[in-house]
Structure formats: C-alpha cells, structure tokens
Length: 67
Image (cartoon, rainbow, N blue to C red; front, side, top):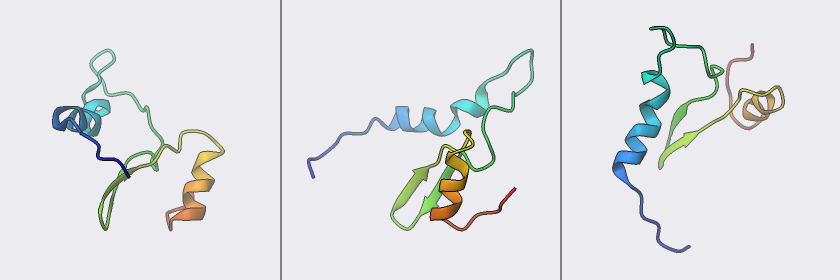
C-alpha cells in the first residue's frame, strides 16, 4: 500500500466539527447514534448510519444496540 500523508489539523476538525455547529444557538440533531467515531484495535473507524440501509449494515458487522 502506498504511503499517505494525513493533516493532523484536518483530522482534529473532522473529529469535532459536528459538535461545534450551532443553529439558532442550539446544536442540531444531525447524526444517528451509530454515526460516529469508534475506537478500534489499530486506530479509529467512522461509521455513517443516517440512512435506513446503513444502520442495519453496521449492526450486521459489529455488535451494537438495536433501536
């Protein structure tokens, strides 16, 4: 696999950007509970489970609470 460069500032912004957003002074509910960063044995993975087809896929791959 070829080497890749990662901008630390961009990674930090990605980790926290949705928590900084305010609409009319309030944080909107923008992501499903399963859409977040998860710690893994060798780093992090970010899941996107906002769509009806993606949440079941996340739960099929990883053990997670079903809603």
